[in-house]
Image (cartoon, rainbow, N blue to C red):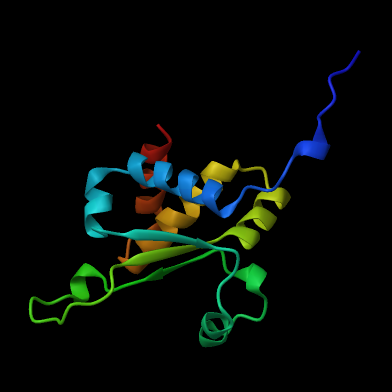
Length: 138
């Protein structure tokens, strides 16, 4: 007799599930990487807002997996006024869509998006980000 999946009881990962996966991914990243985005807040939403999509020239909300919002270290000054903390937005529905279509684990995909949103903002190369992903996976 074959083992059957009880699909009737399965649900898509929730916003809270994504937050937990992202927090775990963040904690596994190298300290020197996390220090570049000190006090980073990770926020999970189903989709980017219409204003964000329009500002970025993106037609479909499924085409944006994440977004970094903040001021990189090379643009900060001691004379700056206090501002909102650096944030990474992870967009649950587009990430789920990509996860369904790919071969990567959900945790691996969330880690990838998180690293790339932070890394691109700070000017890291693709090779640098691959090394960070490898360190976070171990």
